[in-house]
Image (cartoon, rainbow, N blue to C red; front, top):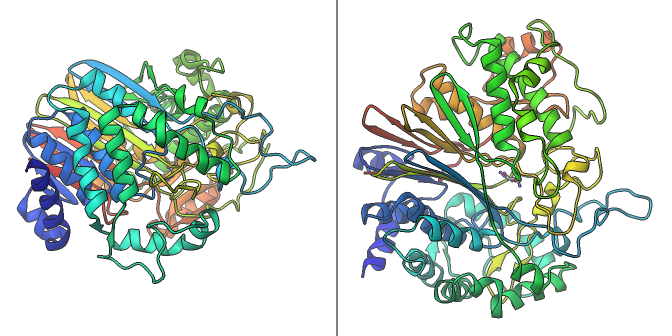
Length: 568
Ligand code: DON
């Protein structure tokens, strides 16, 4: 009965409301206000499910788990059980981070993407079976529930998603557009009938049913982690990998385990910024930039449009992303010098060649100012705050849209293409233009370095801002800018998320700016300082929750029309 109500609620929401009327109704919309609890995710149905769990007394972890499974059904381009991710939790002063990132299969080798001449074979790490890392999401969800579950069982948390997969749901315009765009790749990688390919074009409102996924979710609900990592589902994953040129084995699946990590904590003004340590670079890079900004002093900045502010942030981003390329990788395999990288003396030294007048030229190992992102990318982020002050920030992905495009025919889901996040060859950029070396070289069972930055800002001993974003390499700087818009420039959360963004990642040596949003005077002034600006369509899609003066503001990003916030 309760499940039917949840599904009904989600359907009514999807069919009958436009965003404005939702805003008026208060509890669900692009940006909403609440008093007790809130959740934001990239899809209206997953947010509706999470909000209902919160209303029923589920805590922030439980609501977030239900949302992860719902996204695997309604947001198949990035929501997943075939991928991995990161969770940061702040529970009344107790801060923890869970790493359920994919791992390289046991048969992986350092040069697996190189030809005889030692050149990278194009496409091998991004599409097809060899691009797939061992999925971590299902294990991650069980770890989270084991540590934080209170009221609800995994069965109850997955149940709404099983019903959605079986009965189907109406797809949004953006999903229809993506499905049409990727049809050719779906067919190429999957020579059989499956629910994502149909004769005609997809349109908004078409129903997508996923019976095989419903059965897989039932197996997970009934058998726990083993329902995915052994038995039928594991066999189906292995078959999908073998038929598409992959190397996943049953041992890979059986041995997968998430890892609890000590989160990174940076101090900025009155705030503590809690974020994700390796195997993500997010927390370290974010902390480095904020620490260097404190060192330089920020009282001179009064607007995010100020040239000096943009120049300064870009210069700090360059320095931190250079460290990312040199020193960061999976700390279980490579001795990432985390405390040294966060050391204030080390960071002060990095500022010795900082000039407010002139851009520092990035060291040119690789320097292609014309590098452009080729595809639009998707990852999901969920922010959640419950009535007892527990905050959860989760970012999870398949990497590219629909991951490797390899679909597990008999179990109903896409497999990730996360292997591309490794450095396939020193100095050769991945799909996000990121370079790396030894620290992020491929090794069996190692995790590929991520930029995902699920973050919780604590102020006055309670969660103040919960945020995260998709966007590959731009995730970190999107999170950074929204935080600074709120904390430094006192912007409302809605304005802070909407505000135009820019990004520098050391190499390629150029600033990307959101198209048509920056004044030409600003661009000219930046160029005059020696920067090179390239326009891109948009940067990041931040989902954030702010707690202030007893009010909870929850905001999705207008850059994704499906982003939905819920609060009560
Ligand atoms: O872990 C990472 O940094 C990437 N695999 C994230 C991919 C991503 O954000 C794609 N799109 N928005």
